[in-house]
Image (cartoon, rainbow, N blue to C red):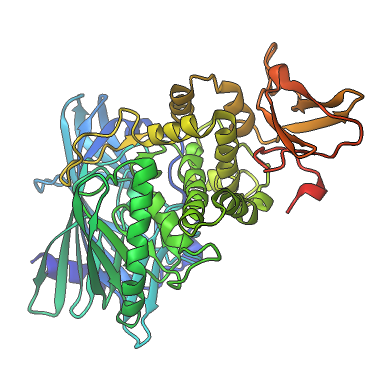
Length: 567
């Protein structure tokens, strides 16, 4: 009966929704009181995907706790999708109004804190098509080499409301979620979490069911539809547990998936070593071959690259998206203003892996690490906006700002800030702090496969506190200079009769009265290395007249560079 109803909806969907009729969609931003009034506990998404018609239809059931008195609540749904009805999960009709991308639901009375809210929203339509996935997202309707459907979804910037009704804000994650996807027979639908069964109907459709048993951010929910084959493996963790691995891959790339899977498992092992246990081991580790480049969908990494290694000997795309299982999914920014915690950390972890591969090969590990940072990141830093502004923002604002200009500083500047922080703190304190970002209360012992994720929200200030706890240092000035305003500090070097005098210079207003920027500087004089501590923002090193010298020879410092210093 449900399938019959869904197919009827698909037949009623107008196919002429012009994508250009709808403005760009964004996730997050300031919460309305009617959104902040409830806390989502569970989503149940039941969806039918028709690749031939390029339409979807389904029901989203939401279970939530009321946290402040409220008589109306708001959910989000992209305008290309039509609301068919809103009911309680028990089937009682509920009044609602549609206003653009918002669904205003009247509750009939003022619900009180502690009460439980349940709604079922039936909807259908031709969803937004991704014009440039995954950067500008939506649905991707592609085909395999032999002309069969290959469907993917990528909505990090747009939010999950691009394809299902949701409270579209990163601060509210359900404790768990079920996803059922119905597709034409002969196709496999993959989604997040544990596979919970397959049902075939007599009329040529197949339903795949999945259970997400951990909290999940809404843009991390995804699906893939194709004639997938599954390449399987078992992962043995250094923490003593084992879990299954599934790689959903197109048949024509199965051999590539089998070839790359051992490397991908090594990525997991490396990240566990530095960042702590993989958080979603109950739901498994899954890789989804997609018709777009990639995305960090929780427990279902989207991978659409060419199954090849970069010049440093590894597949950077898979590594980057997998790193987000720790910094994006295990630890999540509750507001888009702190998105550098996702992207900057993932970029930096790539450089650490490049160093590890060099070490295994008996090569210069630090040289490989520095080369990775320089060649991929240093020349791409813009300094146009703060990496982590104080004010709340939405997904569009953090990537493009007020002037709609793309800015990669949350990636590349964020990574180089961590590089400079490592120099400031030293390796022992830095790597301790890195682990505290993901596991501030320590690693559970023992680590079990069936443990729930230790998921939590984290802000820029939480990151600062993690590194302060590891180092015993006050890092408030460091974080304010590098993350809360855009300009880089400038390092002035003056030759004197006694040697070399160094001084940090910052724009007016960045430092308060009595404050100083005291990041140390390494100076090489006549082949000897010296660490100048820069107390009060300045320092000096002895140097004989005419002796050769180099300031910051290993490029630890994120600072204004002369053009001759740039790569």
